[in-house]
Image (tube, rainbow, N blue to C red; front, side):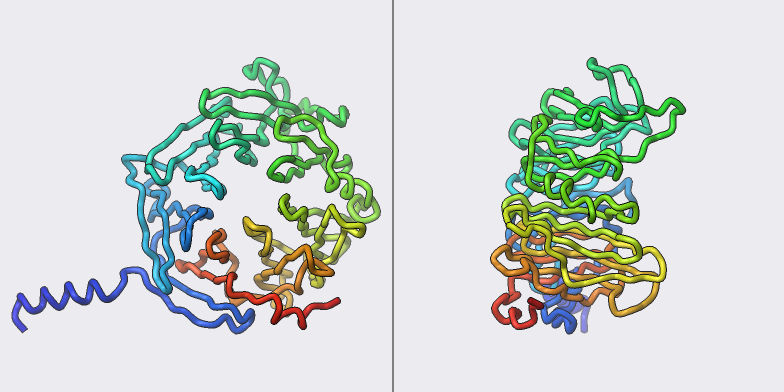
Length: 399
């Protein structure tokens, strides 16, 4: 074959063979279709997007050359649309949900950024008062994308001028990114009035704090009741908070340890994973039911303290994902999906163990159609959850 022929053949092969393609097969554990696609770059963060077959990613061989990308899954391959680093350069941030917005909310160690992923440009960056290395935003949620207001859990506490540190406790804040201003802050102990300020400079443990879309529940430590504030940081009463405080036999014993909680406000469901004594369990709290606390039918009884990773609700609140590791390779260690439906007698189907050999390094959700995306060991794994048929699986429910 002459040189011209080789060039033509090379071009044809380049067109026919995608640069990033994978394998599509049935997940034997779950019965769901699973796609596995190799990806050689290091992934630093993934996040959901409100667009069909797409999710967001921050990736690069090294953290200092990472780029923000929009990733499209087309059957068994990835199409990657990178945002040029000249338009935006990530700085160790992680991407947060942008379900009803074309904006991407990025939370870093001491910086908060909003990026227009469609216009491929930065909307704003805000350093706030977090200009010291050991000051950072523990958690944040977007209150209003249009007004660029966020609610955060921040350390440490400042005085009313937001300039002078008065102790090293945690505060809840409202930050105005558009005007680079802190609108409001309250110490986590404002409502209990019984916070012990450290005088030795020791950093306090962060409070247990979880976001709903219109409210935030938190407590300073297991020794205190749960508190609740709205998005203006005003104290409110909420049924979820009441349930957590009323069931003291379950939630306030000395052997109780809360691993994580995920809240789906539209469906009025909270899922939490905890250990009491030597057994770890998952509970669902449906705060509009007469009997609101419902156990998920799975238990972890390890010889050592269990480890749980990536406890996460899908944006619609239809699926719960978690990983459990008991320290031994028993039948319970692994990755699970739980289908949730408030119309079901027990809200949830029994957990479905999925085919994932290693713990997720990063996890996010496809929103349209609903799906699970896991990155681990230089591969993306994608399960199309929209193909799950609840009617066919009702026979497996444990009443």
